[in-house]
Image: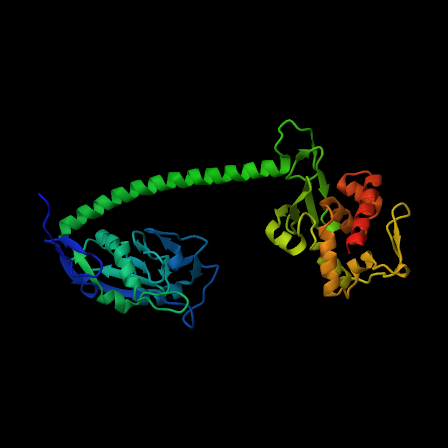
Length: 404
């Protein structure tokens, strides 16, 4: 036999059992208040042992009295308590929250109190079981109805008047107890399942991090010959990989780069403990690169020229490659690379010319004429013979001169 139902007479509850009633919120409670904000009332501290609870310190029926809480003095606690009058059995209710957020006080209150954004609500036990009342006002349908009239320019806040005028449904007290017991049991089961799922997610996240770390520092071939990287946290790396100081590229001797097959994973040395932290690659590429060393290196060459004095006289690669003079009548590519007065049209032409180079050619051009490394230094940094470096520079310069 189905239970007889009726319209609840509320804007949020729909149909309810015929023996349930309806009551205005203001009649369903004994009192409602808030805490105090510091302002001219008191000062927050870090030394006192009394906790100052805000809406971020309780969630999903739990309160967290920990280092995330500010601290208050005993005098401040007394001042707040004179307004909030919190007791066991009261419900803390967040006035600012996208989702219903409340806590049924089940601990002593002598070492903590609340701020002004937290309502403290004491239900009238003639009408409500305390636990049922907590579940009732944190159900999403009711809360969404409250938030329809929430106000505030930055954060939408539920006002006390809105709460006091809202309508609640009232089952018989024995049924409220049964509902509260059922929800306690069911929610506890769900919380336990959720906890285990979260633990599995955390484990998978750690596994994902370890897979990424292994791949970017060891490569994909488990049988490849390895060598010591010289960096403690990296350990061994494939024998054909090289460790490059990034200051050769950027002029900062506190940077180190792990170079892997023409692409760079970038790390910087921290000040605190000498360890390494990962540099955001996307931001780095946007700032310094197009491609591997990329055509945006041109901007860096210009930027570098603005930071230091540059000799605009004769520039030579070396005797075995080529030499370029201002008197030759051909635009001096290298001068354009470092000229602080680089014009937009020349820049665009040079970018296009640089884009026509291979990654390896761009690399040696930047190292040679921006970082001003010698041929032997470049050879050591990129792991090539000096003759190979010279050939790359010569080919790159020839291509630049032709395409510019």
